[in-house]
Image (cartoon, rainbow, N blue to C red; front, side, top):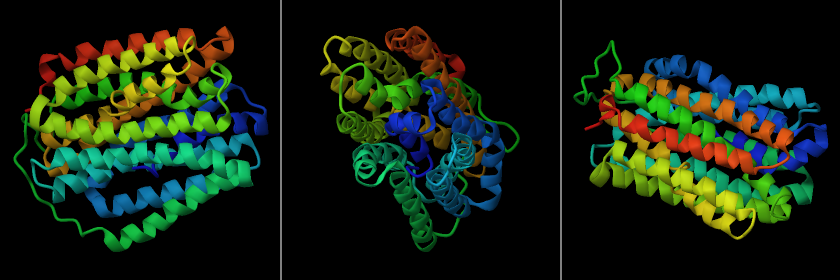
Length: 371
């Protein structure tokens, strides 16, 4: 999971370096996020169905290989257009990752333990954010931004070789469907989760992509200090995803958990507004984001595993992921464009606060219940 989304960490942490190297604007850094996420969104439903056909093990290996190859190719790209092209390729890895790993859990993990395992699985994204926030600036200072990306590309390819030896063979176990899922139809909750994912993705990507640049440009942080903020957010996201995965399975339920997450996400955005006057509040905003917008995936993916049979886990994951990635792809350049044109981050922070709150009624829909 960390490898599949690491390109987004690269675009956030190394935004200033990419702008300086290629002479691009902030919205074009957001366009790299768009290239990755929109390509993933467009193919996610088909990739989810393909995952159900080829099996979770093969799909997981493909995630690591494609993601590592895309990162390595970005590292040697001489022009910005090629960076964008390989960002598109990275979107394929994003599209495969969740269907593959959700299907692995559906096959091999018993109900009652899936919440924690899903949280740990989803926290791979945040662990990647934590590691990238710490290591990318340090490697860049020592060897340059290209080597910084290349190191993580090689790590993903090494992970593919390790996973080939470690992953168990696919064993299809078919639990009884929850919510009336059949081979021909997805339960209605999948559509609600896709809409919720779109809204959280649209607003959340503004924080994930532009937080370090905001810290540098508006709060006066150094590159290393801005990277530490991202790393701290990633660490909080690890804790948030594991905690929410467990809490939603044994106590609150998926939809109530998602309601709380949407409100906390809005609070995080308002803390970023306040940090313009009290810079230390950016650390509190990172905590709030880690336990809210960053953590929704753990709850959302668990809801998919609970609401569809194993043979449809890939397809259901692909539908929800398509909504989420579409939101990521549109939100990043939109936020960057607002900063470029208005000369301030504040209107954008207020805007995403409203979008986070728009997600609240989606979880209250009568068709959005998961047992």
